[in-house]
Image 1: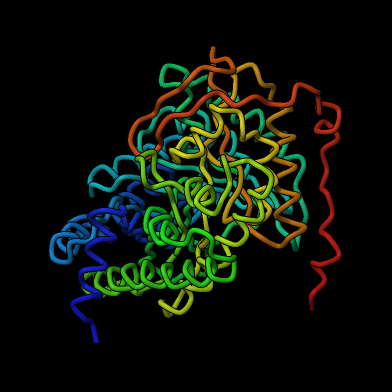
Image 2: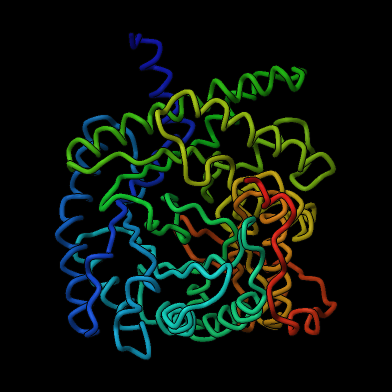
Length: 452
């Protein structure tokens, strides 16, 4: 039974504490679009996306209007292009990225993800073509997002791809330098990538998914912070219980939206991703939740422990509010997209090394971090390798989304607008890892991979 108190509380969460459904993401399989001719393949892709997602945006807007729940983004994820395009006789997949971009614009979504490859154990010819195409593809499109999964607990770390992705990120930054390397904001490197993630830039439609599916991502850092504001002096058991109860309330809003979208579109419901995804707006920050627990500034000693508590409590509370929870689920710490993280970097309490430690216990990894354009490709690769190792050893998803901004120096500010926000240029360790990265090969899977 929904009471008037429930309604008033939900209204408060939406109007004051910035609760929203961050995204409705429609996953679309392109496996039936394969064709040896590139032009025919692109036509098949365009036709399937525009036909399948024709009413996605309209449906999201109708649900938003009827229920009063803000739905910030409507998105599409597709089967990793490296898999479905391999049948084409093509030397570049840039035309496919341009097709995805046109299809996304035709149906009116905010982003389309899936210009992706899964290479944790090695490359196929399609993987190699796709990775080589990434810089030009992201420079030539507006809405296309790209992801590479190069490590897993079962397979280890593909260090050849780690080396290559440092170079790809640098080339992408250079090709989009007129927009402060925004192409890199649409490129993420994963370990243990989930196949049902609705969040960009890492969303793709996994090969084990149905033909189409609806995945929903919810977000409400401001709601959690508000719940903790009246708990001065409470112990951590009480803090955890409050976060769990709050996460339940947040997730049930997402469950309602997901069920409605699924029913109206005639598409199976997949998962709720109950991640706390912040925005640059004041009052919508994960960092401020951690500070509400008693830290003077995000990054102070105790920050990792506070984030671990938050991530665990969010998952425990959200699990009870949805029939299917998946994706990333937990707490995101993207620097440019979190007002509190931005402030912490500015004041010097938060470094890239501390962020790396925090990624051991949070949802994803080193996310939306702007660095100087002078940072070498091998240093970027070293950071990717470190983050992949955290994911592989701890059997969790980790990711890296670094933006080396050409011409920018430490202390500069780069602005992207919207949900991408703005970011101070973050200092990076000056010592070289070039000889380490040059070795290549594959770092073997850890002993914990032997679970059979």
